[in-house]
Length: 223
Image (cartoon, rainbow, N blue to C red; front, side):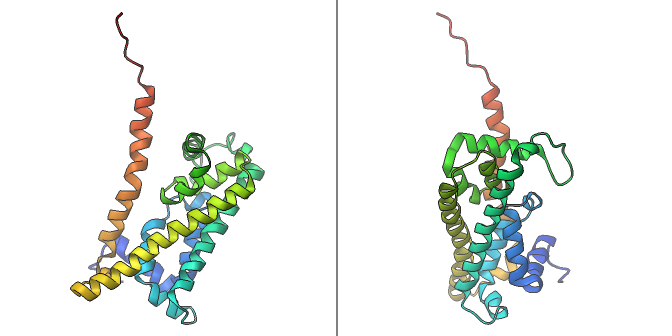
């Protein structure tokens, strides 16, 4: 690894260049359905995968890069199914489980509140929200969501999330390289930080300021 590059950029590049498609699929699968995946950099990794799409495709039997994107979409769909199945089978027991290094009940409760408020579309929109996307399918299983409805929003959300991130990285890389001779591969860290801020700040705002607003008592009006 290049010592002049930041840790985040080295980590993302290591996954893409050395872990390749298989690690990418594992990360997406874990982040969309396993408790241990909530901290993984899904959005930024997908965007970086779009930038490196041609390289990933060459390493995987030299297929077209769109095949890589389809495989990632499938990993997202399957990850959600695993989360849904786990919540469906063992969900009620989680409320009684104590916090550990891998499991934090507060994340489950936040996902539950988000799901209760926004209903069925949570499965779709959760794909674009860090932390929430890991626990939303589990909560859907816990509340016994209709499997056909879950499947529809799971597939639709996976297609929109993966394609928007990977296509954005892929075509932006081509455009800036052709027009400005500017290689996004040299600025993965800055891109990662921007994506993390864009996707995480709304969630943090809702968690901290939303809770404060809900706890405020309505003003007393003198009649």
